Image (cartoon, rainbow, N blue to C red):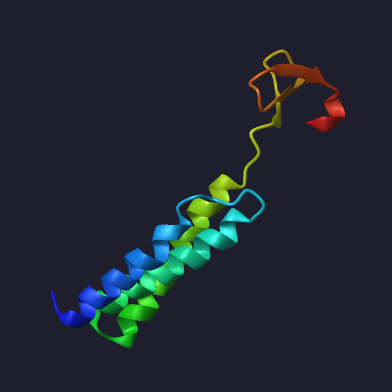
Length: 104
């Protein structure tokens, strides 16, 4: 491990140590893309030592972070069709209630 790689790794660990707890009010897709892109750029630059590695790492990390972050944006409450042809709402507490067909 070169000195540059060690410094990049130490910087990455220090940067992301404080970002473990998610903020509820933020958009997880954007946050995931920013964090993933930054981490990917640091790792890509440290691994290859070139600008191409930084760019590839940023693109791959940003895309992966956005995909993972978008999965966090989904609500736990959603509408769905039951087997009996009726519309139901799954609530965040786990309860399922029948609702108007216009909601589905």
